[in-house]
Image (cartoon, rainbow, N blue to C red; front, side, top):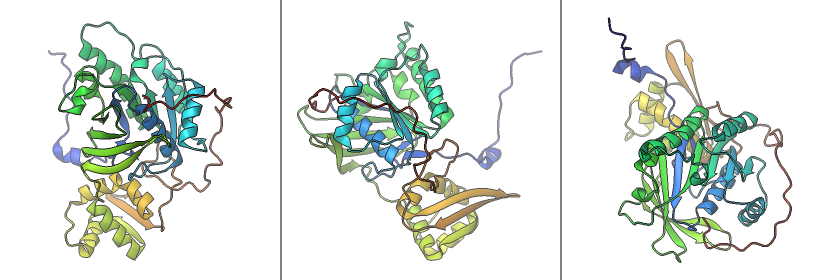
Length: 374
């Protein structure tokens, strides 16, 4: 008699009946939860971009034209000192966020990095974005001859951590010096790195002295895009100029729901009932009830922040119910608390957030602004 373990299988009907949550976005349409990598040549400005992303997310401020989910951030600046971090942050903002945290030292992936991150998440469960700058600083240095297996295994440890906590982890990395027609092929390392991450962002200049760069974006749960950016040397931030491809247009469902709710103010019912009412208002809308539910959850952040529409999902007997409420202008006081899948306004604001872990940083010695440092 065979001891082979049987496959765990599920039929298609049961699979579609599962209540599976679509990706939760930290930056709407640009960065869902999961593992991501930001690559670019040395000194192009990756660290300035990563630091600014933390500042925007921790304050619930938009990233260019993309809404953000306000939540805690952790920036592991492993190639910096506190003095340099102070200098950089003071160029980006006049007021630091009490939901953004920093560290300049951490263990590597062969040591206790993951337990360190687990401990941080226990202490600061409202964290939604962690930046590791740079990936090379936390590589374990394993000597397996199979480079692909090493890369995939190391990156897989961070991905497992990100997926377990449903947060976004952004790895800052370098590109190879050899050019390629596909910018994503220039990511340093084997294809094991590319295969393990959920999204990739490559910052590329035509000439090193240029202020402008293209941000190439691709991923499993996001649309492929090319954004033209310009580095503002005075503000030391990357400013959005235009879309080179994948222009961001508002989803037709978002437009239809926003128009419908502004007239009716509220809705309670099934996806089929909502779809029927939306079709009466917009005859061009075409999707199934299941697709409607999935799209609503994917667009929750945009609906709330841009249109002031709150939503909730519940089950009554055999029916899945959707509740939508128009509350006016979008509310920017959303807190990412780990378990809530649909962001909702925090009536207490920021005063009740933990303030532990903050240390006063002494004034740094003068440091020059690098030309798109890191």
